[in-house]
Every structure is written in structure tokens, then in C-alpha cells.
Image (tube, rainbow, N blue to C red):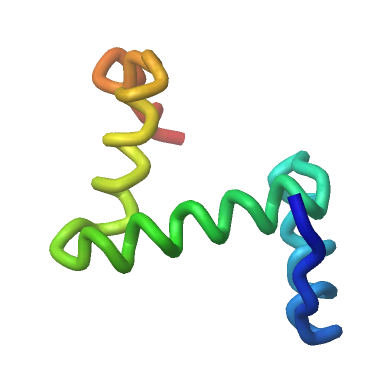
Length: 70
């Protein structure tokens, strides 16, 4: 584990995003880093496809969930 130096504005964006996603600032940064790496190594997949793949790999039954119409 190490320290990463980032710009103040990016740190502020991390802080704000972490509140919305209920993650720590470090967990939010780790999430963005992981998803960014997956996007770079899988350029033909959309964000949604990458998330579905990651959720499936974690054992989350994504196909059984549905969005209700409001």
C-alpha cells in the first residue's frame, strides 16, 4: 500500500462521490482505479457491461433484479 499524490480538485471530486456511493474516499478512489483499468483493458465493453461482469464474478444475481417503473 502506498500514497498517491492527486490534484486537489480530483480529491474534492472523490470526497463528493464517496458521499453519494457510501464509500470511504480511499474506497472510491480504488473503485475508480479498478474500473478505469478494466475500461482500458476492455475497450469494446461499455461501463454497464463491465459492471455486470464484475457483479456476476462476485456472485451477485444481476439477471434476477429488475427496474420498476415509477
